[in-house]
Amino acid sequence: MTKQLPKRNEVAVKDTWDLSSLFADDRAWQTEFELLEQEIDLLGYYKGRLKESSSMLFEALETASDLRRRLERLLVYAQQSLDTDTANSYYQKMYGRVQNLDVKMTSAAAYMEPEILAIPEDRLEEYKKSFGSSYIRFIENITRQREHMLSAEMEEMLSKVREFSDGASEIFSMFHNADIKFGAVINEEGEEIELTHGRYGRFLESSNRDVRKQAFQKLYASYQNFENTLAATYQTNLKATCFYAKVKKYRSSREASLDKSNIPLEVYDNLLDAVHQNLPLLHRYAALRKKLLGVEELHLYDLYTPIVADMDKKYSFEEAKELVRKALKPMGEEYLSILEKGFSERWIDIYENQGKRSGAYSFGSYDSNPYVLLNYNQSLKSVFTLAHEMGHSIHSYYSNKNQDYINSQYQLFVAEVASTCNESLLIHSLLEDCTNNRERAYLLNYFMEEFRGTVFRQTMFAEFEKQVHEMVENGEALNAEELKELYHRLNQEYFGDAVIIDREIDMEWARIPHFYNDFYVYQYATGFSAAIALSKRILEQGETAVEDYKKFLKGGCSRYPIELLKAAGVDMTTSAPVKAALQMFEELLNEFERLMEE
Image 1 (cartoon, rainbow, N blue to C red):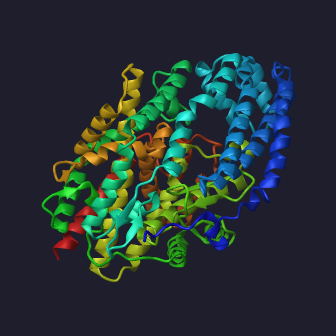
Image 2: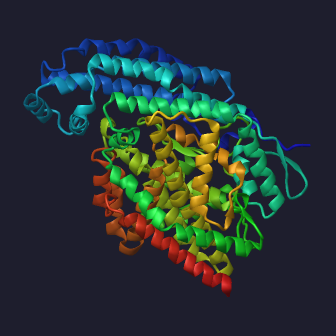
Image 3: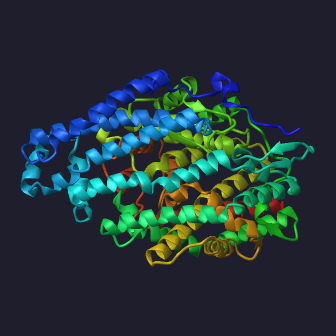
């Protein structure tokens, strides 16, 4: 009999998140939805009037900010309700309704940025002086992108078009989280276990090669069955991204995406160049893995199983919390007290259930607790995921408590820094406490895997994204075969001759949700590199570095992300942080090789 996941209503309440800081229940959500739906029309009062006076502009911005803040609460509640049970038709409808409301609000406010730009610069400077700090950064960012702003009518039209252009992402999400099934895997004990997104990683970590191979082949065979549909869906998403960039007068969709956070293209290019220069390290690591596993051929399904025998530990969720508490002690009592709030006030939805969204994330609104979605499976990776996502949530907590709403949302470029800094502190703590060389080798291997998965793998993803967007921008049609061939070549280049690039991996592009959020993935690699530098600084300099780091956490989007990181001690406009992180990978690899020879 196949072991199945519990249904959502079978999960213990203590293991679920408490969404009451958003809304008491679905009825309260509905009441607020109806009120907000009516009040969106308030935005029409200010249309054509923003240039009248500083008070009129300020009042309009305050009204728009308040409405957006309320919409955010509605959106977060609907999404998080749906994410725990993606097949639930009630929450599907709820989420669809609030998305439509989002489009309506965006359309209603579309005139504001073009009107602000139409105000003479000297008058706008005078207006800003009466605003205090609230909208200074917001207006500066608008004027910075002046050449890419369209007329009010065109901006309104584009906001309405998004209701349709976002369809590819929504279709993929529903397919990926609710519809696709992978069958079952015969586990190490001969039991038939349902293969799910959450269990896939655990199967790949199995010491039984047949279990790993089964999971790998069955998962990708399921995507292969829909390769043409998935290729068409992804190409539609790419075309939409490229369309918006072209209409907004950017040279490329990559430039358009990075410009949202004022990130120079050189940051992206520096990452690709630095990683390419260090690919021999990944090739060397792959060859070592092949040797230690004792296999004639190293396949892609062999890349995740631990290569230090008899150290595949399992950790209860209580044990995971204790490990994270201990690791984050260098951050001080204030930081730890926020961590405890998260644990005790049910910020976390812990275990996998039927229909629950795969993976993990942190999400919340300005007026709610930050929340963490996990699919905790007792692995060491799950412990690190807990530390990672709580890093996001504590970052959000600090930002929301120290910035007004308009300046609170930190930008994507720095989104992965706090989370990965927590992971770096965790591995340091675990290495400090390890009792023997074998345990140390196990932990070194784990951290090298984090480098492989976050710096090397995410950079490969970023290179794939860059190339497919350029192909669409050049008018090339992308079908399943072309996407698979490109993805295959990149895997060959990154992993080298020591690894057999199984044809199943050619479909991996079809299961990466972040590919529907254009040019997001490179920020995992840059964020990881920045976090390595910051955690090193915290451990070496103590309280002074912690206070600098907390200023970064509190900064929200009050400054551009490059500036926030510089103030904390890391300059991402150079390749130095990425090269330093890769140098640490080499040092880990050197030590690991020595330990395995003893």
